[in-house]
Image 1 (cartoon, one colour):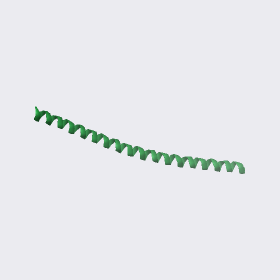
Image 2 (cartoon, rainbow, N blue to C red):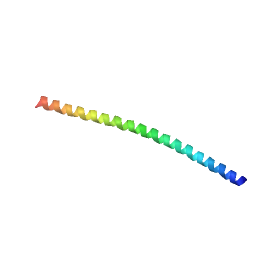
Image 3 (cartoon, one colour):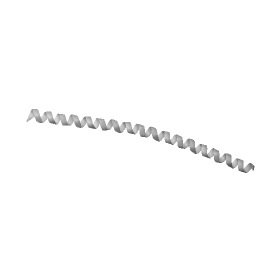
Image 4 (cartoon, rainbow, N blue to C red):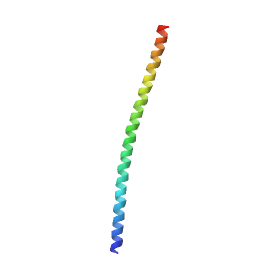
Length: 66
């Protein structure tokens, strides 16, 4: 009986520990995905801006120098 309670207690502790570790890693993963998502959005907007500037510059150069 005592062995059974001890085993139950250890299993519950193990389950709790696994739950905490899982929660910790999931939160870290969500934070990382959020930061990477912001970084990719920023890169996308910068690339779009650069492309737009390049196209405008090309247009003005073609217009003025030809």
